[in-house]
Image (cartoon, rainbow, N blue to C red):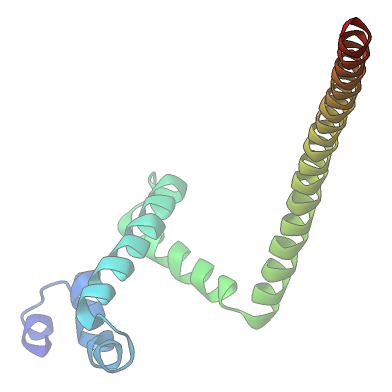
Length: 142
């Protein structure tokens, strides 16, 4: 990599990942380099696509400055705490909505089950009465 830098070649994100993170990845993560390339490159593609949407009209130099400033802000501990707090509050709201929808569906299902059980009980009692009447009628005619 040093030779590539000395010759003025740009270092791609994949090469940077291999150079700076490969040894640690191979020592600590099952799957080692395969996981590094697969997951890290996918994450990079997502971040690059997002950056492209935000800053496509600007030169690469300005894009790099924007991205560096954004990363510095996002990696600030106070920003990370605030982001986590917002994400947690959104999760709680979504959970409440889902639970209320599920509860409503469960109440409807429970109501249907109860009606079916009541109808079945009525039908069973009618069948027992009819059977008893048939037994009484058969006993009397013998």
